[in-house]
Image (cartoon, rainbow, N blue to C red; front, top):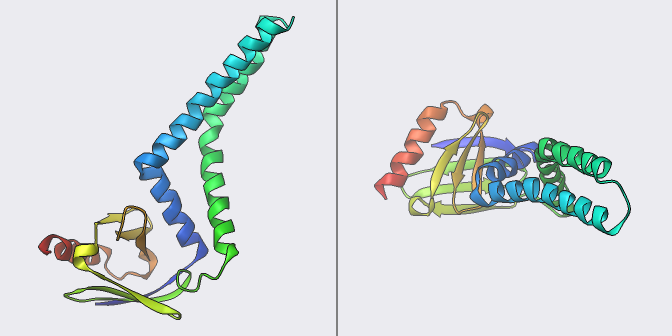
Length: 171
């Protein structure tokens, strides 16, 4: 089986966002940052009320509203920040092996992915799992890396997914 596809910056960003949204570490990081920060806001308001002659009511109202806005809006900022960081990292160096034209070949021994600068090979025993979302098929080779296959380039997503899963389970 052979698949020709092109990976764009947006495809790489989509993978990173998917991974952060679905990994235990990513979820925990978001929850900690989302809910611990408002507690710090309230502690700051409390200490301000003790060590200054500011009135508690307005002080806690302002910090309370800030905390509520933080809890509501922080996830959008968190994912925006990840998108921005991935864009920066992609612009830092040469990414011809990641972004650009790919030719993926699958056979009885494993997967070979060729780009204009080289190729990667992985045996079926090196594939951990296959994940599908609305726009992509991710073939994970480790906890944090995967082949990113845009569905727009796959003739039969269900057929490809079944083929890969069959190879994974038979090894």
